[in-house]
Image (tube, rainbow, N blue to C red; front, side, top):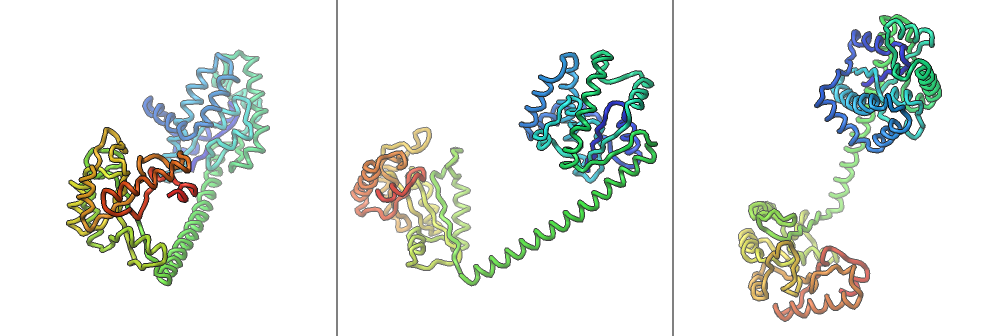
Amino acid sequence: MIIELVGLPGSGKTTIAEAMKACGAVLVPAPSRSQLVTNAVLFWLQRPALAVWIFWLIATRVPSSVRYELLANGYVGYAARYRMAQIISRAGKVVVLDQGFFQLLISLGELPSALLDILPKPDVLAVVEADATVRENRMSSRGWAPRSELGYKERLIWQGNAEASLYGALPLIEKSVRAYRYDGTQAPREGAPALMEFSAGLIQTHMRSSFARQLLKTSIALFSYAVAKLARISRRTPQVAVLMYHSIDCSGWKLAVSPEAFERQMKYLARKGWAVPLDDVVSYANGEKKLPAHAVAITFDDGYCDLLTTVLPILERYRIPATVFVPSDMSVQTGPDGRLRLSEEELRTLAQSPLITVGSHAQTHRKFTELTPEEMKKESEDSAEKLASILGKRPRFFAYPFGARSAEAERAV
């Protein structure tokens, strides 16, 4: 739980923070230089819109004499401290922030509702209040007042603006954050336990509601799982997957799978007995054939040379059928670095295996969605005729290059 303190200078934020520490709360420690930079960067990366907005406010609304201080403390320092508070809070501690973003924005004299929506919200925002005379006496007794570099008159103007900003924004704040009004003039030994008790009540409420929500979610998940299982048992619907490979090698190409990994996968499918020809999957989809409870079809796109040298021996070792989709123009480059494709003779040798079915991957491997209807028709027909001349039979299956398809492309094919 995070408790953020906000109040005007001299209201007693630091005093109450120390008293809360004595009651068991954790004060966010001053970060080291590395912690300051790292936590601030990570915090703002999570909230880019807030980062830009607050930076703009500091750059445009603050006198140049205090701009650097606010950028260093309010922009970098508060971001780092808030992230540290989040980390400590996740460990189950009650954390106290005596300087935070609500304080920063009130000191800037502006807290628009849109900005309030994207501010990081503490679990409790404790508004520490004291009248102007008390605040001024406290600052006089300690011989220091914030914004003293502005000069006495300008400091009083700034303080008046901050006060108007705080109490003008308080109704909005209380709608979005659990606020606690704390009388900064009372003895901290009495006030701190009351604030801690208030926060402890919220923790218990939060834990009870979180437990109830989690229990409800778990119950719904278990019920949904049971219904899905019963429905699957009643329908006996097979689960079908098609694994699409391209190249089997150790090149590191994003569409390549290593021979070792590919063999492990084929060995697994063979052990499970799940591998089926793509023809069976299509027949099942057309209502013409039944499949086992699990069915996996293997396909390859583009027709690279490793199909003959690496893939076929593994498929034969485990008796796995596969469908190979090949662009009929054997000179077309379909991969990076001039990756070699099968020649007509090598494709003919590959197709002699009873495990291999050859399908069309168009003629020149162009995206059908970028072609005219006439070009799509020509790509389809020329590919089928060319493959028929190589293999002695027309291909039954067609795979769209790049998966680019449309109703018009389907009509052309």
